Image 1 (cartoon, chains in turn red, brown):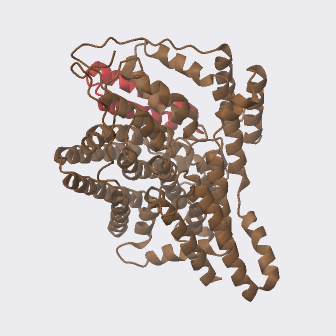
Image 2 (cartoon, chains in turn green, red):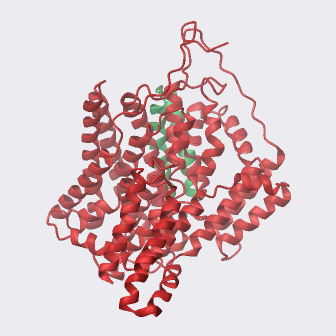
Image 3 (tube, helix red, strand yellow):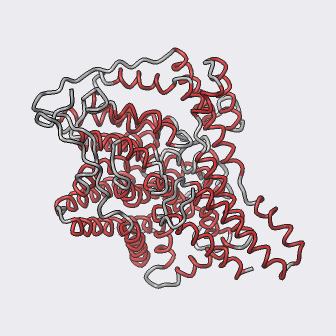
Amino acid sequence: MHTIIAFLFAGALSGGIIAFALDMKTPREILQGVAGGIIAGFLMAMMLPR
Amino acid sequence: MEVLGYLTLIIFVALILLSLFKYINLPVQTVLVLTTLIILVVGAGFRVFSQGWQGVFLLPNEMVGGIILHPITALLAGLFLAGALSASGGFDALKVILNWLQKTPIGLAGTLVIIIMIPAIASLPCGRIIGAALLPLLFAFGMEGGMKILTKSQLIVLIGAFGRNAFGSCGPSPIGGVGQIGEGFLGAHFATAADGILRAPQAFSLFLGTALVALFLKMITMKLYPDDVSLKDLSPEKGEEKKEVKIEAPFKGYLSLIIFVAALLIAIFQPLGKMPVQTVLVVGAILTIILCRVTIEDLMGGIILLPVAAMAAGFMAAGALAATGGFDALGNVLKSLTVIPFLGVAGMLAIFVQMQTILPLSCSRILTAALVPVLYLFGPAKFNLIDWNQLAIVMSAYMINATTSCGSSPLGGAGMMAEGQMRAESGYIRGAYSFGAMAIMAPIAAIYMKFLNLSIFSPDDPELVRNLWTIGEYVVAIVVLNIVIIKVMSFFLTKDIVRSWVFQLAGFLVMGAIAGGVLSLSLYGINIVFIIQGLTGGIIASLIIALMTPKSLVPVKKEEPYPAQGLARE
């Protein structure tokens, strides 16, 4: 569970920063980036030993 | 033996440096094989006098004995499966899925984030595989690629960030990843290290490092090298119509993707009982070949041999160094640094974890094979400078820094694939990639190992705790500091090349110092002396890295201006 939470956090933070760097700066786009990051983080956590 | 060790170490380092600075124009693998032969000849010469002919005859055996076969065979099996996936259209199926994802509520922004992170999730043994498959898809988002969705600036960030993620994804890969070299050594203490003790810290820091690299590309690289990408931009005046490119994949592509994911999951979680990862991967590849009817020619086209050659050459050189006492000599040299008061063990380790970003080669496996045994010797196995837990922390920081080093290598490094795709001059992304590995990934991997992963892999140790809150605090602090430094650097960049480079250098030094300080904190807790030593080591490492970052690039050949308001040719 700890691993999943850690990766959801890392994914959300990374997703928001990447969306911003991609010039997608409206709240909706940033949130979409965060959502994408959370999905990526969850998938990554699922692949890791826990 | 001691003199021989120093001599062979000098030969090894000299030939690597000569390659790096392009005084030797040969592939690094070739140079390493030559290095191995020279070391063996020199070693034989010494042994004739010290041990007689019997010692000479034993030398090749000792060299071969130093080669670890497990990562090589795992890598070969991983490449075999990935080659089958590529040859059967599995990546086309992935493109269709990503195209569909854009139309869901997560939209374009969320889809692009997932695309950028896919290499880490896919965990292939070499980032070049997924890079070669998906970089053309990213290019298609731009003006020249046909979709006309993203601007030039967005495309640079997208390709650069994807490349950063891809060319670090070989580290946490469970199927022949670079990290498995370190996990093999940590297995001497952590019983379940081979299950992937280094994977989560690497993946965690790779996620955050990728994001900061995207920001660095946007705010620093594009300002520092404004004329060095020849991509065409979208033209707002005429309002280019966005085109939806139809992406299709054959049925066998979906089938191979399912087999690939299943093989990966079985290899990682072993639901069918303990079996070598190589067996699972080879069975998966054979199933793909049979069910998806992949021809041998297609399969060979999908296999990338560079990492195998690099790893084998690296292990050969490492074996020769081990047999002639080269590692003992390197260990002694680094240990002697620890007696310098302002450096100490903490400072030496802060430099050591950045070693492969300082010396970036075409494949990180080359130096990893040579340097991980030295790092191991710092632990209880020989020099006793650090305990097992500290060794695992340093190993995680070192490993992510090492695995990402092929991205910034000028010697045919993987990052050149991304530069080629974004039509940039060689060296364009080097600063961003080096900065990400040095300032963000190494310290965050250490923090993750310290406050979470150690307790997972050593559950009986009462001193080890799982503290997500502390990880969160460190991550936020490091990320915010990085953003502030990137913003400040960006603010001071001007058209004056030297002045801009000096400001970049200053940013590297600040973040290098912080990275060294955080490593010391994760190793020794709050101890002013160790923190200062870590800061000093971090500054020295970042200074060398920053000095190797290009001030300016060779200008790309300018395209002829388009006739009407710079619009695309008819």
